[in-house]
Amino acid sequence: MSDTPEHPGFRRTSRSLPIALLRARETVMGPIREMLAQSGINEQKWRVLRVLDEEGPMEQTALAARACLLLSSLTRILKTMEGEGLLTRASDPGDRRKSIVTVTGKGRALILEHLPEAEAIFAALTARYGPERMEELLDLLEELHGLQD
Figure 1 (cartoon, one colour):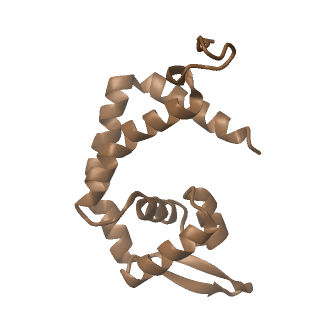
Figure 2 (cartoon, rainbow, N blue to C red):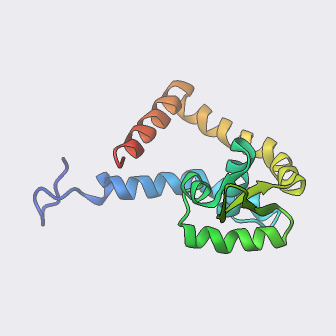
């Protein structure tokens, strides 16, 4: 377990899952943030665009869950993105209280503009880690995420 001398049974920070996940996140997100800085969008907006492009128009609550954002944060982000012409929002015909979000051509063009570099970033990580280990890591993270259900 790698106990700390001061607190037996308490993991060292070098073997702490939350800290290890944060370090891994920074390893992955650093190059992506650099890529996105070129177009002036942040990682939250990127996630929103990617989810909408991949899954199509969707209701805000579902979008917040898929993009790993709090609904209150997403609402602010969507207002900005709508003003930037990256997406549109419209009332859900089945429930006027809900809003359906759709990526625009401008938003899709932004994704396509960054696609080669995003793929190169992932390919470099995969080359360093190995394709089988990368797939295993993704499977383990999906399984870990599923534990909260």
